[in-house]
Length: 155
Image (cartoon, rainbow, N blue to C red; front, side, top):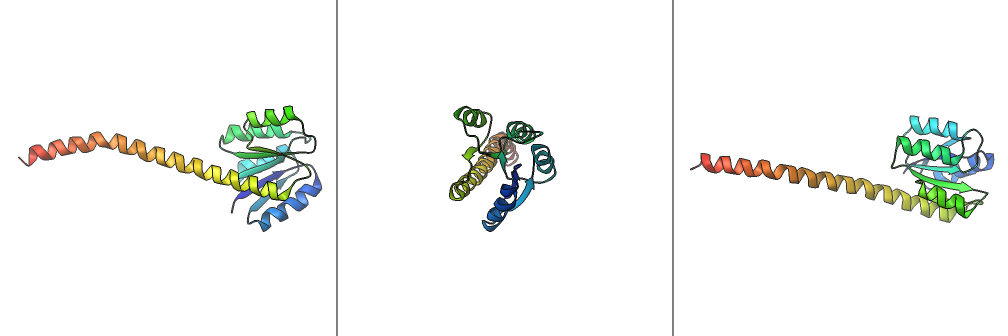
């Protein structure tokens, strides 16, 4: 189960998508604009953000930049009813995990969320392994020193 934030100014999306995500086993939070979405992201533990590109007050790109400034590992999927290659490239290069066109194909969305959550878990595991490697490397000189001291004491 993951905590997902849906940010969109379309009431239909805010009414139907949370029900679908809940059926898939996720907990959802909804926001009708970027400002509200950023507030919820700051107050809650959010695993994944699904946001519209064009919204009043704060658009999706501004929201993503603010979220990534708070958490560089945040997973963000953009939804848009106005697709363009330039917008998709800009979003992905700026840190978005994915980019989907409305109307949403729910099977595709489910697959992208699952893959994104798996990627996030792999990244967490990688940091743990790196930390353990450093701990081992740093402890080797201490064990060598302890061995030398014990060898001299036991002579």
